[in-house]
Every structure is written in C-alpha cells, then in structure tokens.
Image 1 (tube, chains in turn purple, orange):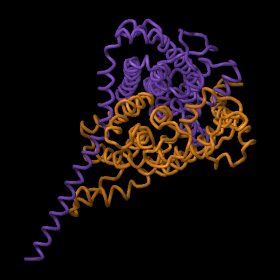
Image 2: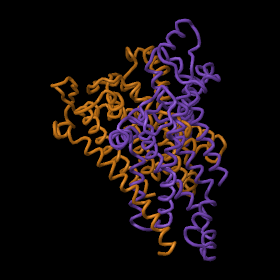
Image 3: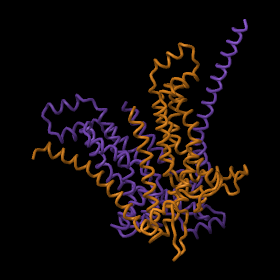
Image 4: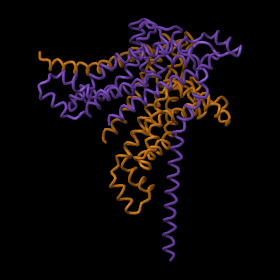
Length: 293
Length: 282
C-alpha cells in the first residue's frame, strides 16, 4: 500500500514538473516575440502622423527651420527625400557590384562542390559574412574614401554594403542550384548545349525565383545599415546622384534627427518608413522562397 | 580555346575575387593600424588609457574589449533561456502546426529590424523604464545595451537551435515516450543530449553577432571610455567607440580606431570559426 502510494506521488510530481516546464516554455516564447509587436506598434503610433506627401517629395529641414516650427507648435516642414534617393542610389550600386560576382562565385561552388579549393572559398565567404558591418565601414573608408574618391562618397557606402551582400548572394545561389533536379542540367548537356548556355539558358532561368529571393533578402539586410555609412557616405542635405560625393540615406537621417533636439520628432516617421520597407523586402523574399517549395 | 574552358575560367576568376577581396581587407586594416601599434606596441591591447589631448595622446583598447565582452556575455545569458524555449516551442511542442510557423516568422522578423530602430526603441522605451525602476539614474549602461543586444541576437540562436532540435530522430523520442517518459524528460534525456553541440554552436554564432553590433549599443551604453565597473555602469564597446569617435579622428587616433577594428575583426572571426566548425559536424 505505502509502496503504491509512494509511486503515485512520484508520478504526480513528474507530471507536475512536466506541466510547469511546458508553461515556462510557452511563457518565455511569448516574451521572445513580444518585442516585435511592441516595436512595430510604437513606430506606428508615434510615426504615422508625420507621413504625408511632402515626407516623400522634400529634403530634410535644417535645424533652424525645425526649431521655428517646433516653437510655433507647427508640424516640422520637409521630408526625407535626400535620404530615400540616397538609399536607393547606394543600394542599387551595391546590387550592381555584388549580384553578378556573387552569382558567379555561387555557380563556381556548385560546379566544383567536391573540390578542396571550393571548400576554402566557402569558408572565406563565411568569414566575410561574420565581419561586423562597422569594420566593413572602416575598410571601405581606407579603400575608397582615402584611396579613390578622396572624400566621403556614395561609392564608398556602396562598397561597404556590397561586401555585406556578397556572402548572402553566394550562399543563396549555391543553395538554389543544388535544388535544381540534376536531369534538367543533364538533358541540356546531352543535347550538346555549350557550357555557358547551360548556365545562362537552363540553370539561371530554372533557379530564377530562388536567386530573386536571395537578392531581396540580402537587400533587406543592407537597407537599414547605419554604421558603415557613417564612416563612408557621411550624409548630405541635398539629393545627390554623383558616386564621388557624400550622400544621405534614410538610416543616416534617422541618426541625424536623433542627435538634433529640434528634429527629434522626425525619427518616428522615418523609422516607420525604413522598417516598413525592410520588412516588405523580407516578407516578399520569404513568400517567393515558400512558393518555390 | 573552347567556350567551355572560357566559361570555367570566368567562374574560377570570380572565386579568386573573394579571396583577393578578403586579403585586401586584412591588408587595409593591418596597414591602417601600423602607426598605433608602432607607437604603443602590443601594450595597446592591455592599456585602458584613452587620452586624445594633443601632445599627450595615449590610446589603448582594453576598456572597449572589456565593454564588448561584458555586454555580449550579459546578452547571451539573457538570450539562452529565451531562444532555447522558443526553439522548443517551434521545433518540439508545436512542430508542424500553424502557430509554430507564425512564431517562427515573427522571430525571423526580429532579425530584420534595423539596428538603429532597436536603438531608438531602447532609448525611448526601455531606458525610461530602467530609470523608473530605479536601477540606474540615467538608464544608460551595460544592462540596457545588453538587454537590447539579447533581443537582437535571439533570432540567430533560435533558428539554428530549432533546426537542430527538429533533426533529432523521432524513433529516439518515441522510444522514450513508450517507456513512460514525460515530455520534459524526453527533452532532458533525449533531445538535449542529441542536439547539445548544435545548440551551443547556435549560441556561439549569436555571441559573435553581439560582439560586432554597433548602432543600438552606441545609443544605449553611455559612451564613457573606461572599463565598466558593474552591470549598470556606462562604458563603450569596440564597435561603439569606432562609431562615436570616428567623426573627428585623424592621425594616431584614427589609426587606434582602425587597430580596434582589426582586433574586432580577429575576435569575431575566431568566434565564428569555432561555431561553424561545431555546426559542420552535423
């Protein structure tokens, strides 16, 4: 009798422990995902009122304009056009630099998957992916700002962003190619199609959605980068499309607004805008990737 | 030359680009930091001086190495229980259910939020809360920066752990259940022993991320160039001091900042290599 009783209490203890553990897992998971909800709702509540047409069509105000507006209790004039164009310009340049090289290296890794040299290239790509973005900013500063454009420039910003993108493009290209069924490639080779046409006409078109998804994901990673641009593109009060001139970007503007007590109201709308674009790229990329499977 | 040889040559050439690029990056950091190491020698790493006064210039990296390690270690300690629970939620408790992919997507979105937005949120939401709780008078410091860092690295640790936990063979789990094990016992005696090294690799990689995070930390750590003396003390990390001091830097100061960048490059490289080595065994 007493042995049986001891047995049941022991089992009850085990099942109680099990239940407490399960509840703890759920509670901690809720804590983990709560910041995303809190951050997005904070940005929407504080930021949506500032977003209007001039937000997209005018450049950022100078601190005096903002101060007058704040003193008269008006909405701060101007927008973030110089930031939007700067971000577009530099991200586009980064894509032009990184995507072709990244796809070629990804194809190389796929074609030579078993070779020792390919493993080394893959390891190096992993190392580059792990480099903190601020260090990439330093490197682009030494290479481009000091060496090429002799001053802060859009090109320097793009180079730091391109290096960030490169390993992501390499990885996604290789993974995409691996997922293409081998018979598709073999059929083309058997028909006597030249090697470069197998790649250009068969492999890349078949894997196009995978490549696109990889590119969009890597763009979403660099859109919000601030630190490397502070060291390279610096920022500019006007719209700039010269690659050798300082250029603004949305994250750089947020940093400027944050440091200027007169303009601090603008941080929320700019952050809401930036985050909306980043998450849109992120989700579109996931959607394309999911559709492929 | 045949067209096949040309195509293969182009691919081979492309693969050389990334090697040359990486070599060029190391060279740029090395040559940029030579003046600092010439002036201070290896003592640069062990000195906590940071004095930009002209004529008495003296720089050392120790305060920032300490700040980096303190914030990152604190962040990973907060991250471990949260990321581990969430990966169990995704890959074990609700594996394959709709709620699991919703939670998984939300965790992924955390990785998509720009660092500067985390910084703003930390500054305007988290910092006032810490002041109200009376934990510190200004709300800046290792604690605040580390807390935000923890949120930022959770997605990296979670996605790797969830992947590894989902790979634990079902028959092992079923065998334990059929012996009467509870779910917690299955996790403790089957999942953790099987997934241990993969999960720790995930945390190592997340730690590597934390070491190099810049903007959010810069906005929350308080930016004082001293070795932090406690959880609520202010300080600076290697990344945040570069972001902070770069604007007005030239000469020896610039070289010292580049030297700190080189050290950061080496440290994150080592941590990542260790994490990748463990993961490769799977």
